[in-house]
Length: 224
Image (cartoon, rainbow, N blue to C red; front, side, top):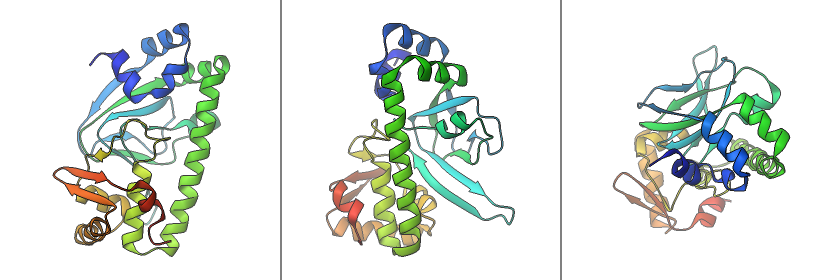
């Protein structure tokens, strides 16, 4: 797959760009590969790129002074992250860790800012993404405090299939039960129990190497 095909599949926002804008993005973007467990982005570093996931899964997490880790979300194919720190020009506030072997695209800050100055469509896309991300994190706070593990698993999976944030995800996401357990913050055994409950409810199907969503709306409201 060449760069143009990669961007078309995993950077849907590029379809709104002019030929000149698209040419600069293709010239400036860099594609990198990371193995499972590698740091894709480091907490505290200067944020010089907007990062998109082309393949694999990246976990956004932060570890406090006491060693306890908090996972914010996972970013599957088609998702981009880091725009908040780019806009505020602040150090990165979380680690991005490859939960599986992954491929990412990195768009330099200068190109990102140039698109903001030159493309109304890109501004609109970014505004929609930020609004969707805000709703996602408000939901995370809510279900962390109020929901049981089965409902937390349901919401976590629903978030990974968000069509606005992650347009590159199809009906099936390649993710292991261990990876889902990390994202939800439960043991692998408890994750397996939750997946069985959701499968029994007809909301998803656990398949070899991943999860297939059967009822996205039902996952998003499970336990409400």
